[in-house]
Length: 472
Figure 1 (spheres, one colour):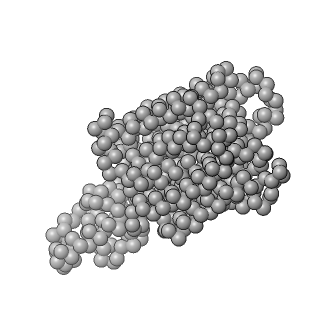
Figure 2: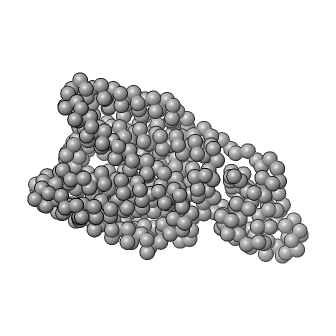
Figure 3: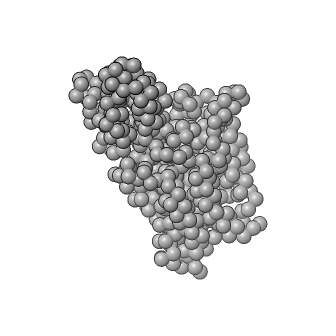
């Protein structure tokens, strides 16, 4: 396994791993910041921030092409990072002497909400462009390690809570710098930017993916609030979390070694994550809360990785826009966390800490996870449709439509479009030279430009790209 791990990580961008881990750790500390200031425990920055996050992602779904053109630029990323940092510093100031300061609360939620949406989208896009799924897996594990270290060293009352707040505020800035260092130059080509341009199979796959995400995140967030309300950061420094952390690190190495490149073993990871969450939810009312939530957190950790690997696979194999896909999944995440918190508040009022009612809710949620697995995530990669090869064009008009779509997406010149059409019809370079009356060097130059603009490396990859592209 060690040799496989080293092979998979041979081209991993460790700057990207560190940068994305910092981004994830910032979000955790930012959302848990109210726990550092007990007098501020009643304010609503967390919920408002999630709502802002969801709303700010709508343009990524409706206008993915335009957003993707600017999502990686420094003049966008750095202001986002500064906004996230400023919002983090404002979180503790949103309540003074137990009274909410509405303006500061709204501003903190706005800044952190937008940052939690688009810094993550920028990172997802970068990992897609790098084709570095191993780096993504390692960044998630690194975030867990970093959060454990920080909470063990700096939690109050040993140190002022402002130390953690300031550290959290610096993380988006460092993350943005790492993003600048690690992001490849040039634009990331995607063929499908709009929801209405998705084929029925692709749309079905995305809905299945989001449905699974919604249920698992909803259940895990409800359980976190129910059993660890006000003690999340304390949990991260406990012995149970250390045991879970060691398991996460060990299994992350296994994922990188055997799964990340071609998603081998994804069905097993799905089963394990669903099983752990189901068991934890069913038994949490009857066991120690930290142990129960540890199992839930452990399952959610793997589910998050698997879902994102599937999304990366869709982007890379089927040339779908990372901004489109991850805006949809990130919006799903924000909404279900928001709804789960509301459900937690409502259930607390209804059952008033009644043990029997809590057991009924746990059984219901456990069955919901199980049914979600049966009816949503039973196939290999989240969708049987996308794991199948698409049909070849049935007629010349269909092929021409696909070629026009490729030419437009890659901004091919008129001559490059002609060369692309001949390649699609099986012409060799010498034959293209003859038909277009060009030198062989000119033909090869056009082919090289087509490869670069369409993000492929060989004739076969180009033919595959033409085959899977949608002409709708």
